[in-house]
Amino acid sequence: MNFVNLSLLYKEELLQNVIPFWLEKSQDNQFGGYFTCLKRNGEVFDTDKFIWLQARQVWLFSYLYNKVEKRPAWLKCAIQGGEFLKKWGHDGQYNWYFSLTREGKPLVAPYNIFSYTFAAMAFGQLYLATGNEEYAHIAKVTYQTILSRTDNPKGKRNKAIPGSRDLKGFALPMIMCNLSLELEPLLEEKILNHTIETCIHEVMEIFYKPELGLIVENVTAEGNLSDSFEGRQVNPGHTLEAMWFIMDLGVRQNNPELIEKAVGIALKAADYGWDKEYEGFFYFMDREGAPPQQLEWDQKLWWVHTEALVCMIKGYHLTGSEKCLEWFNKIHDYTWKHFKDPEHPEWFGYLNRRGEVLLESKGGKWKGCFHVPRSLYQCWQILEKCK
Image (cartoon, rainbow, N blue to C red; front, top):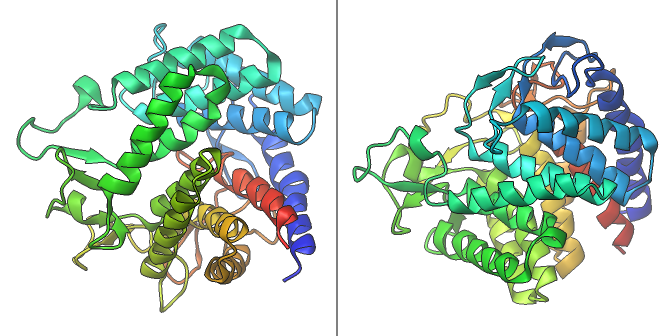
């Protein structure tokens, strides 16, 4: 494998294809923020604005400005999105809505904790790019709100009947692994270290079940397996994304054992989640082999595969695992063949099980300027270090 050429491939795809697409096609020059519902050629087909995706794009352009090059256009793009979020994205107390109209009128109330996590990421990175203390304040207040809601992320909008089947989900502790590192420059060391230790414990000892060799998406309040649709659910993409977060924490803590454990879990998840007939990773699976409740269970999604690329090349770089390198090559071939659009910029998001394009759109309610460019950046940087 020629790591130099591969690194250049990822770098050029990021800087010459994907980033120009979002810079040129997504910015709302009239009301601020970003359009994310974009057809194959970048034409806007819906103008609603989703807080997850607004915040992720603020983060992405701030991050590129901080890490790659001080391009004024990148910073301008990040600031205008941040200012839109600051003005319209919350209720005045930094409780972040889920979605807005184009003009900024709230559509869906602040029920979704991930609106908060990505808002905190966005303003933390935007602060690092600008030095604006107001952005730092927003990031820290939002982070504290997240910590206060970890036991009941949905708050009063939780529809479950208390005491009937109390489950807790994997997604929040997983995201907190990454978010805590993102906000490290802004947080008190005591709070940061406690949160990181808690997240590592949750991910690697509560949701990871060694008797299965798998991470499950939901466990009981006591941390046990639940024989229910939610309790049997496995999401290979979540596992693979989480394991590169854990590897980053292992590097921060100088903990090679944690990194090795993360690599082992990732390799098991990849083998478990790979479609042996048509290739690519399944979206959802049932750990008992029962029919999953999600009708889209066998679709092949962009974010699953782009996060898997980061996980495997990072695992190889940190441990020298040849199995990780083999998986990276396998996922690379599938991803670039099926998700990259040969005619227009940016990548497709949704394939059917056979790997055929299901939706030609480049963005929507869930896909925006995040997983593809973040993965391209990560792979570019890691491949440059590989030998």
